[in-house]
Length: 536
Image 1 (cartoon, rainbow, N blue to C red):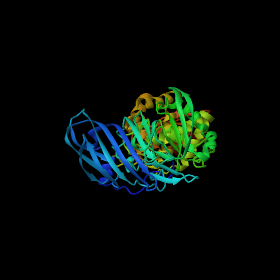
Image 2 (image 1 turned 120 degrees about the vertical axis):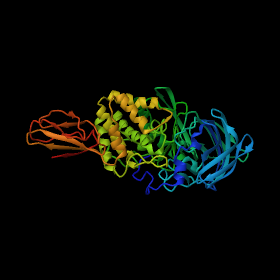
Image 3 (image 1 turned 90 degrees about the vertical axis):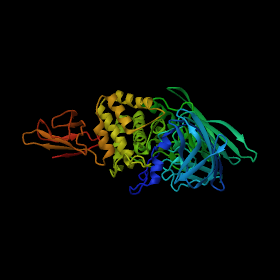
């Protein structure tokens, strides 16, 4: 998701049964593996409502005769069908419990279809609060979109609304009024004109996709296309913009190809070659919808015209194009199993912004950008949120997370190895869901360093490590880390009086000593290590 200081959900910690039903992978969710959806809906623009159905195809992971799917309770479920039978169901908050007339044995494939209708949640400040946006373009044509990360895809369509289980493929059919288009994820299979003059657009997603990435974009769009020759061959590039912005878009979207070249170099091939890459003009700031990135930055450089780093480097490129496209690798290709681990999406993607700068203006510029972003870090609560309740951690997952990753890169001290780790993560965990432990274990194994205490300190605690240095009367210095983790162990670079270059020391939380050549300034590399220092 695009950055903002009030991005993450607010409120006191106090979780309810509804939070658990939404956030936990319970037995009634774990008992089936979703394989395919066919979402087939009609959007009533005038009444701001949805009606239609969703087909669930799944494999039983254990014997079952009951399961849970999710749909906000402001929708009416008209019926649920299984083998031409209408199923019984119960609801609790936004969870729906379906009962089958027979036991579906482990390993069996089965399907059911949910018919529903109602009015979706309307977003007040998309994409941060989530929901539908019903508005008009400058020609008074309807312009409709949705963004639902955090809020949940079940706010507008029935599904197994848990990030741990991505559907393997999906058909998205959206019927819209005459003269309008719908742009969704994947590739357009067909358009079907209906008897009333409306049009059904059928989009097929050929890769696994997480629920909040499923999208629709309804409007009177102009389309233009291009292609990119990348690591896996030809990648189609498609752009859908409002008619009055066609020429502006053709001139402005020049960041796309350099972005793809940079990110393929650092992260590996674009993950969704078959489905292509799309930018779609949206009536809100932006969102990383897989293969259908929502763009609403109004054709300007920076983040809504500002530089989040305050260094000037953030005004040389369009933040929304770079950041939301970075999510194609981290968030869409690699997805966290629980929203509590959303740092995996946002830290790596915010870090990708600095890599784009590095690709175009050099490493020093990228370091300046990352350091500049630190002014936005609040250190208010842990980056990792509470598990099983659909709750993310602190918004520090963006800037603090990116600076953590740059710190890890510096500790590893080998940029070729660091690049192979980033590419390896996308290869090892591509099109899969992961945990924080998966990411840390992979980096440790391939870096051949135990960085566990480093990750735990930055992700699970609010304070950043403090390097304490004391000059001693005999000319030596003593030093140690002040950290929440008793076993915290992170090297750092310093420059003692008389040194001509950085030297690496290996502090722990226990006091160590080091000979020094005399009085003078002691420098610590706080550009490349996100730490605080106390030198006495």
